[in-house]
Amino acid sequence: MSGGSRTIRVLNVAEKPSVAKAVSGILSKSQGGMRVREGRSRFNKIFEFGYNIRGQQCHMLFTSVTGHLMELDFEDRYRKWHSCDPVDLYHAPVRKHVPEDKLDIKRTLEEEARKCQWLVLWLDCDREGENIAFEVVEVCTEVNRHLNVWRARFSALIEREIRESVETLGRPNPLFADAVDARQEIDLRIGASFTRFQTMLLKDAFHLDVATDDRNVVLSYGPCQFPTLGFIVERYWEMQSHEPEEFWTINCTHNSDEGTATFNWMRGHLFDYTCAVIIYEMCVQESTATVMQVKQQEKLKHAPHPLSTIELEKRASRYFRMSSEQTMKVAEDLYQTGFISYPRTETDCFSPRTDLHMTFALALALPSDKGQNPAENRANAIVQEQQEHPVWGSYAQRLLNPVEGLWRNPSGGGHDDKAHPPIHPTKFSGGESGWSQDHHRLYELVVRHFLACVSKPAVGAETTVEIDIAGELFSTCGRVIIEVRFLTCL
Image 1: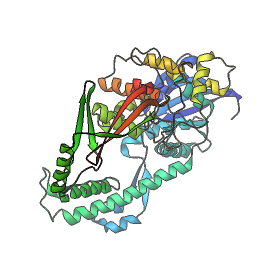
Image 2 (image 1 turned 60 degrees about the vertical axis):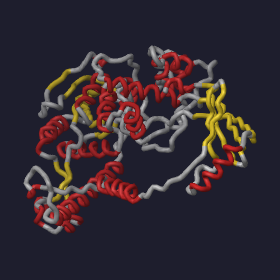
Image 3 (image 1 turned 180 degrees about the vertical axis):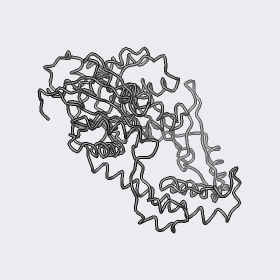
Image 4 (image 1 turned 30 degrees about the vertical axis):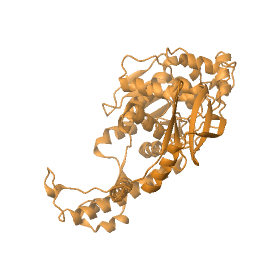
């Protein structure tokens, strides 16, 4: 990519209208604003503004799709249920096409692509986004084979990340798109064949109490959902077949002015009632308990791994009773307004090349200017911003204070999808007026989790006491917290 004196027209395509608007707003901020006009689809507007990419003056046209532009389906002669045997669907030809409800978006892309020299793809940076990117490429290059195709990679709708991504444009990855094509074809063939097979086989074998006409009943099969149902049924059968068995255990307590200590029987439990009673009576008759061992050791409670999508959903469910669907809806809102990074990621470790502590130190110590090196330009003062918050701000201040010694680069959970970093806050908020309670809760969860994962482990002291009563051993364990550290913000 090299600069030039001639202004070129660049068609930019995002995955959602809201992302197109957000990115356009960021890039046009220093260019005197942008002009908005209608496209063929009333939901997918076109934003126009000037921008300079590595010395090349560009006239930017920014529009969007709404998720996948194309659908995968069988050819018409295989689409009727009784047109073929379900097993024939495993080798029936399939085709990708733009459905009726996306034709206006396709027309917009075609009209704009004819007049452009570059195509920049701003789709989500995962396999699904890469597949949508190649759908856009296919539509645009059909009308303009000379388009220079670029890929923008970003994980947060914030100025520093968007500007960096436009300066580091790369090429789209066809292997990621092919992986999604393969998965879609497998899902289609397995889902359609099994759905037809079991519907035609079973709908007349059982009385289905449904409100609709029995002739319209479909017993759907999903390649992911159906095996999951199998796990649930298998677990249900295990629970139903379980036969509970009585057992007995012996515990003792010691009362003092400081409280009550409960000692647990080190045998655990007995299934023989007579033996349990005999041992119990022996212990009752023994008036003395002998302390056999007192063991003290330091215990560490490590900070959590960086936040992945699954962990976000689990914690939102546990703390707030939010469903996975609601969690992701709210997380998507926070991402699109620039408050958190991309929320759909399997990654739970920051790149080993990213020294977060140095990054934050640079952000604190150095003013922003054009003479900084790229690492300094990427400086993400997340923790510094959070110092302003009335609840967890004091912990953020301690975290950045070298005297406190609280900082620790986060440990990784071993998962990296190579597309996005773990979920983390990207912009400070003391609480936006338009947020629902779920927005406040989820943003707080992401911030507190991030502050915790860049902290040293909490330190505790554990004391274990073992006693002997009539030859039977009992033990108790107590813990005290010595250094609270990240537990303060969780």
